[in-house]
Each structure stands twice: as C-alpha cells, then as structure tokens.
Length: 431
Ligand code: NAD
Image 1 (cartoon, protein in one colour):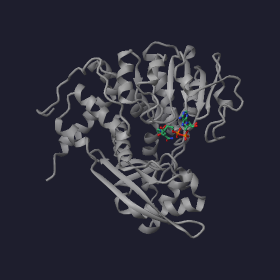
Image 2 (tube, rainbow, N blue to C red):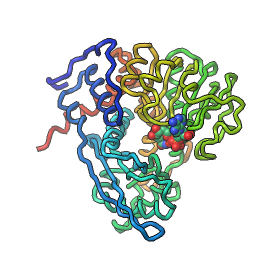
Image 3 (cartoon, rainbow, N blue to C red):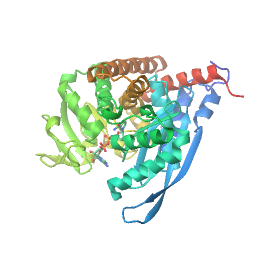
Image 4 (cartoon, helix red, strand yellow):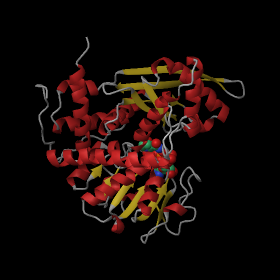
C-alpha cells in the first residue's frame, strides 16, 4: 500500500448527491464514493478519473440514394494497466464523448472484478441505426473501422457489440480490419458469429451471469431459490436469459417487461413462452393475461428485482416505491448515485452491474483466447468456465463486503481498485 492513501470515511448520513445525468457523471460519482470508503492511493484514483485516450473521428458515409452524411464516432480507451483495452461499439443517436468515457470506466472495473487481463474501452457512432439500410450499416461499419484501425487490434483494443450493433457488425469490423492488415485476424473483435471465430455461449452469457449471481445472493441472504419471486425489467438478451435460467432453477418469475409494459402473474409466468426482444421485438405483453406498467413492476413486493433494460431507471424518485428485498443489476448503470444511497439507507442490497452482468465480457475473453490460439471450445466448456469464474468473482466481492462492511457496489469497486492499484504500483509511472 502506498503512503498517500485516502482514508476510510463514512459518507454524510442523509446527504443525497444531486442526480447524476450522464454515464460519466454516474461513473465518477461511484468512483469518488468508493474512494471515500476504501484505502486506495490518491494517485491511482486521480489516474482512473481520466481516460488514457479519447479518439474522435468523422465517419463519412454514402447512402443508398447517392447522398452523403458525416457521422461522429468515438473510441475511448480508459485504462490498460492490466491488459489491452476492451469494450463495446454502440450505434445510437446519443453516443457522445461523455457517454463513452463513463461506459469505458465501467469496463475497466468490470474486467478487474472478473480478474480478466483487459482494461476498459467503449465507443461508437452517433447515429440511429434504424434509419440505415443493411448495406448502409455495413458501409458505416467498414469506414468507422478504418478510421480507428490504428488504435485497435488483438493486443491493443478489442471491440465487441453493444447497443445498436450485433455479431454481424463485428464480422464486418473483423473483415475490414483483416483486409487492411493483409491477414485474417479474428482476435481484433469479440461477439462475432461462431463461423468466423465467435464463441459458443457468448450471446447468453450476460444473462447467465446475472442468474448465477442472483442464485448466490439469494443463498447468501438465506432465501431458497425455489421459494424466491423475481421481477425482471427489460426482456432482451440479458433479461430473458436471466429469467429463463432462474425459472429453470426453480425460482418463480412473476413479472417481465419491455418498453410497452409488463406481463404479471403472482403465481408465476413461464419465461420460455414469452418472446424475448430478439425473438419478437416488444411482444412481452402481447399474450399476457395481466399487464402492469414498468413503474408498477419496479414497485412489486418480490424477493429480487432485476433491472435489465436501460440505465438510470432507479432514481431518487423511483426507488421510493421499490419493495424488493434485493436488487441485482442486469443493465449497465440502472441505479443513479442518489438512488444507491437511498437504497443503502433502506437496507436494500444492490448487487452491482460490474459483477452481475460481467458474463458477457468474460465469454468475450474466452472468445479472444480461442481466436489467438486458433481453437474452439464447446458450449459445455464455456458454461463450466463461466460458472467457475463467476463464483470466484462472487467470493472475492463477498469477502470484501464482509471485511470492509461496505455495500456490494463498494465491495466490487474495492476488489477492482485494489487489483488496478497493484498493477499501477508494479508498473510504476513512465518515464
Ligand atoms: P436488448 O436490446 O436485447 O433488450 C432491451 C430490453 O429492454 C427490450 O425488451 C426493451 O423493450 C426493453 N426496454 C427498453 N427500454 C425500456 C424501458 N424504458 N422500460 C422497460 N423496458 C425497456 O438489450 P440487452 O442486450 O439485453 O441489454 C440490456 C442492458 O444490459 C443494457 O443496459 C446493456 O448495456 C446491458 N448489457 C448488455 C450486455 C449484452 O452483451 N447484451 C452485456 C452487459 C450489459
């Protein structure tokens, strides 16, 4: 431990910070909150408050009708002290420098909590992909890849899919990069289709990790899985996979939602019968006997609430009516900093995103290992390795939670920040 440390301190009781609005605000608020409670070098906290590099590029694209548009793209590389940068590429109108910095920071913590040899990155293009044809999306992706080609690579920075992008997008990135490098380099991106080096089990991995962590957390709080009731907000890749696994393992899923509202049955829904966002978009309430609102779902008296849709759904306002005994974050950043403090004051544990949904980046790591070794793993092996890595991360966070007497989020930060601090101290500051 270095001498310039931030002492453990108790946050002002009853003090609620102003609502953080961007992922960068939220990520910085979480980091400074963690720094108040854990002994970590001041230099390391200061270093981690700033990204290493922010790349901003202009992406010109020719539309199918011959007209042109100029889009802005970003690649933020937050920290690489433990290994190459790793993080998604997002296509969304609100992609920005601030959003990419916040999301890149979360990737740094997530990789460190999981003890993966990666740092954090994020990026994307400020565009609404729904307004583009398939051929336009391909041209945009190839040109964006070219614009960031010199800063990505299998040992530099490895992108993955995120909002608005998918395995096909990653196949185009891999092809565009490989064509310019003159050789096929599958390890430059993860989340590819398995025919070009993608991993079995990648798609379902974030939902699987949410289910594993929910199971462990219920066990910790001595609630049998078989008697647990669960509500899931968001029925996409993360929410549907988590709900279905928890149902398979004996839990009772009483509500699931999409952007239109929630299907509800207090005796239990069959999540396998409800189409996920990928299967039939926004069809959760289509055949439901009882439909409630998303706000109603957040207020259900269940054992576990899993917000798995978008960020900032649990705010100082909405947490007022949360009645769940436990929250497991499926989405990235679903709980604002003030909401987090209110939940802590009410004694409702929140298992953080950087642990719970980290199955995605963990199987991305397996994919990268498979790519650089030119070997593919079976689904069974991926499932076994993920189970074991999630349990190891859970144990590390549980130990920090008990040792420091802090919330689960601070405990996850403690695990991540200690590993990052150790790497920074071992490497030193160059020159
Ligand atoms: P998705 O697009 O597959 O599904 C999102 C679901 O949320 C849809 O059912 C949609 O209708 C619903 N939704 C959207 N807005 C909503 C709202 N305001 N209220 C209620 N429901 C709403 O997305 P996904 O891949 O499952 O990702 C969900 C969250 O998990 C995001 O925060 C994402 O960043 C995070 N995440 C995803 C992955 C991954 O690999 N898919 C990994 C880690 C974290």
